[in-house]
Length: 403
Image (cartoon, rainbow, N blue to C red):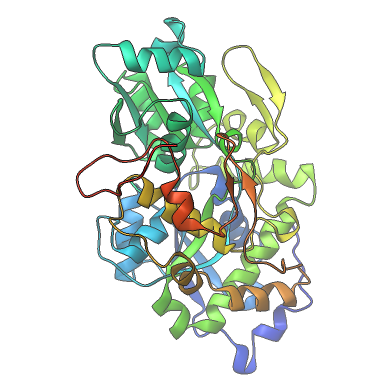
């Protein structure tokens, strides 16, 4: 890996010099931390006068607390976690938060246990029957109550006619512990990021029933997050950090060989500490579901995609707030667009991208069709949140008419 930046030195000296040179960055052991690992270890940060110190975290709650306390300057973060912290519903201290850029799209999955597989529960229809007719509720794990995986799990279950709050039990399990929980029989299924879904399949501990990209093709994933205070006190550092990670993201997708070398890097003990054959196939888009099916996924994990992945779309952040509202995590509708505009550091991103010759979309909103056929484009978040046939029915939750 041999990064080169014709613009890097422009940001090292003079008034644009970074205010800090050593940055502590939190990450979780997930394949979608790839751009940060490559930026930190393969020479992408040094031209900007930065040293990136990667700090692996045990759970998203630990990462949350250390980000707010300042022990971490920035982090590989769940979209839903950053917004929950901003809105004061993360279970920790509320804080003004900032998203510098997107780190990935796609690349998570919903797996079911070997027990359900052996019982013939290998389709959404069979799962729906089991959820509604089994005496005890099925238990599903996700990685954080307001996180991406909780929202994908809720959305997918609801799209299959299974109420995620009433028909199943939901528990929180840190990503690297998900496979152990499947093995021990503590959970019937889970929604988690790679490589843990692939690892469960490899160990014959169940199968992949749905990928997250089948729920929402090219959905938002993790982000490079920090507090708003960090950006305001260190704008040059934040911009330089964004540029280094952007270059790393672009580099990884320049060739299959770069993806392979990245998978090898990630497998190391300091990062995912996982066999290469659990990481590389799905990073290359090669999927096996554990039921004998294999395919090349057209919407596999993406880290750059000509800047479409890394651009901090306002509509992506707004979507998570609509789901918080849908499931009763928010009692009232926030000012969706105003919150997103405050969190997403669009001007800083545009500056970083322009310096690297990376195209920036003209619109800050994008349109997508999800698994239930509904279109999300950010134009009417209140109507979108209120328009679902399955929603929260807990006390104080929004009264939403069924459709």
